[in-house]
Each structure stands twice: as structure tokens, then as C-alpha cells.
Image (cartoon, rainbow, N blue to C red; front, top):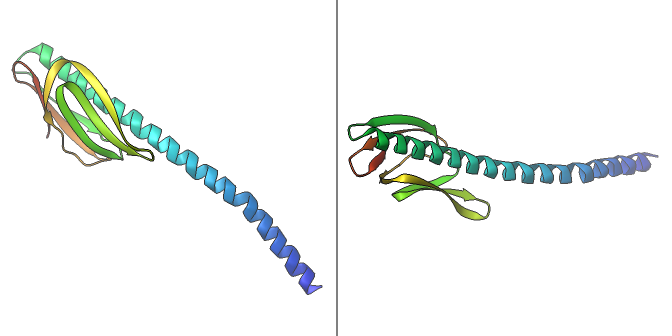
Length: 135
């Protein structure tokens, strides 16, 4: 009688594990996929905000300066600015991907900030281009 109860208990626990483990695996894969999409969309939003403000400062004229506050994506690798392109590199499960925003004006500078943190970006018109730096 005791052996039968033990066997049934082991079968119930095993059946519960068979249902629980795949659910956990599916949840984990979906959440990591969603996190990558969120990071990519956040990088796109940050890049667009910087480019929009760079264009605004350029068209306002030479002494124009503005500082914006942005929240950098969690898995950001680097930010590069050259010519009319602003590129934010994001690390994902498939490797590093780039989010590129193209401006109507020439830009230069560098942004050094920690991933997943607030960054203050200074955007300054210096005549023929806009200089973008971390504050």
C-alpha cells in the first residue's frame, strides 16, 4: 500500500513537472524576444530624438545650443556620429545590430554613456555642422 502511494505521488509530481518546464521555457524565450524589441525601439526613439533636435538647432543658427535628457537602451554597445548618420549599436541574441538615423544636417561628436542609464546630450550649432556630446 505504501509503495503504491509513493509511486502515485512520484507520477503526479512528474506530470506536474512535464507541464511546468515547457511553460517556463516558452515564457523565458518570449520575454527575451520582447526585451530585444523594446531595446531596439528605445534605441530608435533615442536616435530620432537626437537627430530631430540636431536639425532644430542647426536651422536656428550658430549660437544655438540645447541639452536633452534621454534614457539609453539596456544592451547598448556604442553610439557613433559621422556626417549625417547617427548609429546606435545594440547587443542581442543574434549578435550586434545597428539602429541608424539619417539627418538632413552634418553632425559630429561622440556620446559616451552607460547602457540603461539617463544621459544628458548637448547639441550645439558650430556653423557648418552640429556638434553632439555627452554632458
